[in-house]
Amino acid sequence: MDLHILDHRLRVTSIAKNGLVHFTHPLIKLIFLRNRTRCKFFSLTETPENYTVVLDEEGFKELPPSEHLQVESSIWLPLNVVSNGNASSSSQAVGVTKIAKSVIAPLAQQHVSVFMLSTYQTDFILVRENDLSVVVSSLEEEFNIYKEVGGESVPLNCQDVSNGLQKNGKEAIQPTVHPVLIPKNQFCVMSLDPDTLPSIATILIDVLFYSSSPKEETHSSSSQDCIEFFSFSLIDGYVSLVMDTEAQRRFPADLLFTSSSGELWRMVRIGGHPLGFDECGIVAQISQPLADSDISAYYISTFSFDHALVPEEDIGSVTDMLQHQRTEPAT
Ligand code: ARG
Image (cartoon, rainbow, N blue to C red):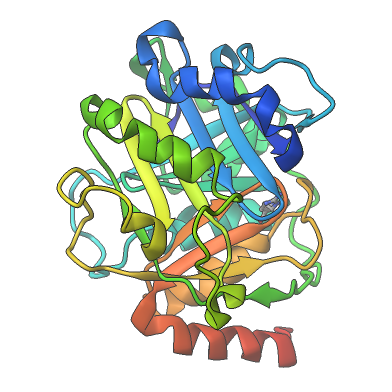
């Protein structure tokens, strides 16, 4: 299998809800006016806490400095696994489940902190640029590693990067078990042709920027068990959307597409208080047991919390599994 270190240098930022008004102009440019910016990697996720914006340096230049903008200090690089078609694994599972054992577990073992971004198309594993040598030495056994430079994939000469330096290796530190929240909403993971973005512009603007000012009273008794979560990304020309079924109903059905009709997902939000960026093994802790049970999962890290999406029909077993993890921590 091949691992690509993509040619994007990313910043992880968050915009405070009450500061959004200072960013609507650049965000509209980044979402809708692709030929006015050189940004190639853009992701925006709304959660109850804030808006998480992950974007490359070109995009980052568009954001005005502001007290409402928090910026994680590191440069993050996206890794991407490309399986070269040989169906070596019998698994039908999609998302982080496919890379749990080969990428996520070894990185966690070497104490490398990751930031995950699953999209409709693929899963990006963001690592700190400063950790690159450890990343390469942890993964070079399993993968052919390529670095993308100006659109071309150059095989990485491992000696260039890895000087064998591994962070303190094997001693297994007991990972913190974070509380989880399982909201009631059902989610879908969708895509659309970027050329059709203009035709959904008003709905997208409404959903993204005006969600907290409902014009109609939709508050049924169940809505308090739901979480506000909407994710849009435009990465190398590909659009990915993660939204709940309530938001989905507002879009014209013929423009958005999903991999198999009616596939719905449930969310597990990980973290009781903001997770920060230094702790490692959080993604591993969730994705490992999912991989063991061959349950597909998307995984989206945001500035404050992590979010796993699992098939609706598996939420029961996933809940049991997490419960088990909490009452009987692995030794
Ligand atoms: N760094 C965590 C890990 O390596 C995942 C990201 C958690 N932090 C966050 N702000 N979402 O497992």
